[in-house]
Amino acid sequence: MKVAVITDDGKTISQHFGRAGYYLVVTVENGQIVDRQLRNKLGHTHFADEPHESDPGQPHGYGPAAQSRHNQMAEAILDCEALLCGGMGMGAYQSMIERGIKPVVTDIAEIDQAVMAYAEGKIVDRVDWLH
Image (tube, rainbow, N blue to C red; front, side, top):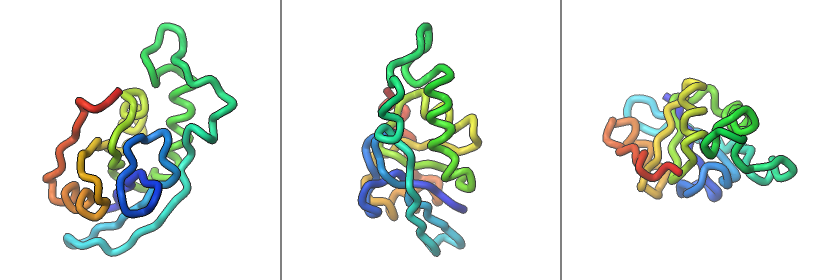
């Protein structure tokens, strides 16, 4: 299985999905991490010229403009079954689900520990941290 993790340093999970610079894609086979691949991730800086406020009548992170940004961010990890992060908006969370990627908001900071907790079915999805 492949699991994407948002990161800025390749070792720890970033706290904000939109601001993280990279995805670390971790491959787990037979209960062990067998591969790691650092991939560039689109984020707030790439969309700086676009308005980031919510579309009229839509909650934060919803609406056509936000969904388009989230879909562009997901393109790099469409081969992954899950996305681990320290925090994200509800709109981004829903967009990942719609793309077939299971988003998980975790309080585990260390990437290997979080990936193994996910692989073992022991990770807690902190949806209460969504904004």
